[in-house]
Length: 177
Image (cartoon, rainbow, N blue to C red; front, side, top):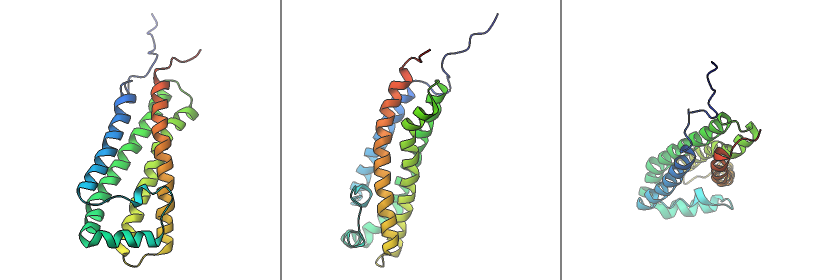
């Protein structure tokens, strides 16, 4: 007798498509809450329009030495950990959709936003750390890089959030043919 082949892979359960993105959103909120409790508003990391050296100088001078140190030693490492987490969730979304028979291009559209956004987020955090280390002398090139990577990260994270919602739909959608 021929053993039946399972329709879907059991490596990643269907519930992952709910609790994975929900956990990302929970950690997103908790990271922002924790940073605000430390008194470090993450204004640079959420600036859709980008920022200039003047903006960075105003913000860092308003923070003062203590909050700049907290930003560098506590907020940025936590943000890197969060980026790695949502990057892993994005990669698992890609794998799980492919394992369920969805085409590669669709899986990449659903999970790729968070996967690539995490890479940009880590690059952004290193760039902001470089700005904090070199403050008060800010290189326009470093500021421009941090600003551009921030903008790309914000777009990719937003697309990744929409992709996670779409991935939940495609995970439960029966395969045609």
